[in-house]
Image 1: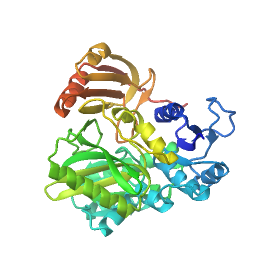
Image 2: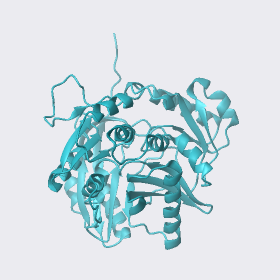
Image 3: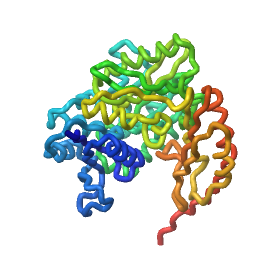
Length: 411
């Protein structure tokens, strides 16, 4: 009989559509649950359940009314918490709500990592209401200020002195007051975290729990230096070019981190830094790698769905010895007009595809406030070095026209 799965994700997210297509190929019945308006009558014609992401308990209660559910998959940090609450009500395997809540909070995660004996920077949680002046005087520099619950380096800012600290604090405060964030009424958005800066090379690990054991699917190098003042990710390359001892240390630390958080089921995406002192876990998310980036691991969606259904997950086969993706950064704020050089960028040897996701007329917001990219470049080659080289050369051919956004004058 066909397995029936719940998928929680963003209404218009690319990843949601890809998972739906994968479920159809596998012959699974997929029930979508998204953050759409509950008043509209199925505007996307996908019969999805309308959820209010700002009300996780209510969303979980809505999902609990479903019958005959074999598994649940979540795309995103907030959907993962809703999935955890719903799984308890439905009596199906998933991570506990407490473990997902800890993974979603930079403060709770740091506390658990520290208690487990992992390397953690000096950190403390500062109420937004306290203001920046006193914390700036007490901070040890360089330090990093970050919101507790935002992902993809959004709102993460390095400060090297008190003046930069105050500017970063106020910038994060304005970001958290944005209506799209404020409407979620997150308790943790009343705070920000201050922690010492960790020097070193950054990596990302994609994994999946199979029968309670963490299976490593890919370990990515992040070859660009991420030293601030902002921390925009650009290139992921797999397999890692680090020596075996370093890779094993990363895997052991990731296993210890997920154990400290209490995660036990489904996909995880972990990020860490490595320096002469060892491996520093930055975060472990109870979800797969986000958005279009998942294309760098063909078959990832099917593997996650099979696992959620309780079937043999199988293996993840890379199409070539090495693969990578570049998340095309937004160089400056403005309005997207056009892009030139696409054909040249796509013609570079080892480039699989160049996808520009920005739409004409779209307002572009770079990090630390922004939460998107101009697009993505994908490459497959015989070596990681060749992948990285192809990505960089391809990107050099792209020329983006960005118009200045004029301020709105209100009479």
